[in-house]
Length: 387
Image (cartoon, rainbow, N blue to C red; front, side, top):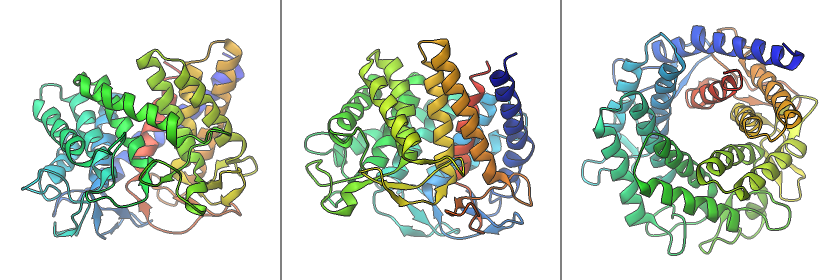
């Protein structure tokens, strides 16, 4: 076994042990609300719940996480966690008139923010796809996702391409929910969904290349006006290295699905930017924000960005056209995994930090449930390099 292969095996073993033996049990046993349903938004660092208002995306992400855990071979409880998340999405979080989802609720189910949120609906569709992968006989999961998808297409389609944030329109238009809609479409394609998922994924992929990507330097902007021009001023100049990695991971997957190499070229450039300009080699972490000239806007480093770095390099390794290219990508995937592990240094094993300050210390704050989705997906992706 080569040195890099051995490092990969050791790193992946450590990550899976942390996930299976500690994180997944805690986030169900302590993070699932048996009394009111759904999931707590955060856990304090002693694992007591921080019972604040609940974003619908958290229930959706926990469905994804425990469905994926089942597919990964985790032998702890998964079905009850998936059931509880789906019950929240199909119950308190659902508007009985429109069939769409409220964005934020109080722990008792009272609606706090009921207007359409594109981001939350993208995660709901991903949750249904994830559950369907482990429950392929449950067609209600597919019907629920298709109903949401078709309502978004009918009600929130942009006049040219993409989707609006609301109806009537509000600005800015955002790339981030499009990215997660893209992710949900790919998940449904992989789960055997209908052709419309493929059509929407194709539209988003091409919208990204044509409008989201900076025509001169290949970076991906975040905020746009109603005609898909970058917002004026500073808002239109923001790029997030973590999203560069995340879009790259999706584009590499889409390149395989579509058979079109142009998406691979875009992905490679996004990874290059996120690594060279957006990753701090001294801390071995990907930072939060850059300006579009690649100068640093915000040097803090969020946990989720480290997982996207892992996923991007895993996909790059799987698509490498030479042994040397694969080895280089695997080395980076191992390096990114070590960066993620910095966030796991907590008194209670299975919790994690969320925000690293520029000096390398961490904000002391409750652990967000929403990050489990990022973590388990990254660990699963890297594990595929060993298979």
